[in-house]
Length: 400
Image (cartoon, rainbow, N blue to C red; front, side, top):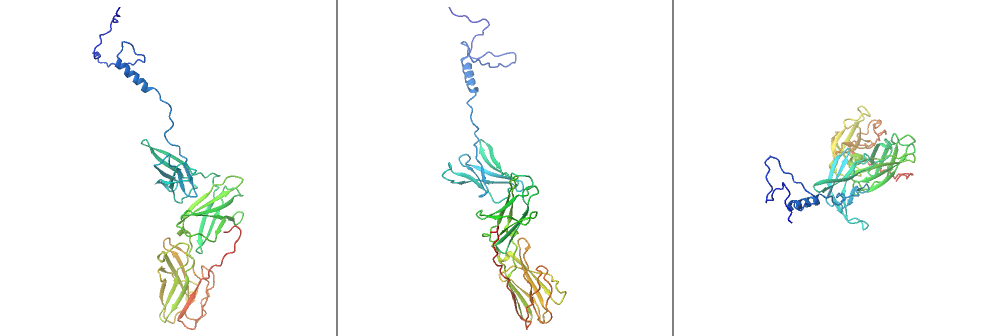
């Protein structure tokens, strides 16, 4: 017997009936389709149900980088397989943000694949800058990074760091302990040079129990443009923070007096000549300038006249009008770095001129030594001074 249609069931047609009350039909999906339901609607509901089912849990697609900074090479590196196309960014409290592209390094046999790295220059680290690796992934930027830590007591780092290069090869540095550093703190200083990042240690020596520490290196390696100086403190009582700074070489070197200073006179003039001093830096003649101080012995003894400034040249000479008879005068010469406007040490006084009179008995203001009188029987002739080379220093414990 055939089943009849349920009362009130509209006949099936190719299209659903149109409503006349202005409302929109809502599609209602049933998980278990009825035998007399619309097959297309039922299949759509099944597919929609399958699509809405939760899939398996997947890990975060962002790679986990082992970002490492090596202060001995100034490199930030990570595995290239995790982030082959990345950039580096440094967020420095003093220098601001610095970005650069990454490079590839083959690495060692113990590593899986090559290393990617960014090469940074010498910069201070004691204020804990942040190093970051920026990776482009799925139309977004993924950042992995690290903060360079400086653990220890606040205000325990060394202070008042000062360094100077002298005698064209030696270095002196001094500093004072931090206000909160334990009294038994031992300090050591290390240098890193911008050329090949060559490092050198300089043990610290306290001048006294409460005074500054000093460090002396008798022989520096070949000069570079910048020096990174780092002071580490060690105490069994508490951790001590480090302090570091980057110096430009030209700001550190104190020039010695010029070499081979001579004064040659004829009846009308005197010519002062000299050779440039030896320096740790690799400089050229135009990098120097000179000051000549001439003091007449018969006018206000001991008071120098205004210095004469002379630019550095290959010949390094200055002609002074000085007709005979000329008074006795004291000459001193010093060299400076024209790039920074600094001046070096004055030369020893060189006296020239007429041999009559008592000569110059005044003290040199800078050196505190009595002017050397060089008697001549004529007012014309040659006066010269050659600076004595510093003797080798005796080695003391704690010096290099």
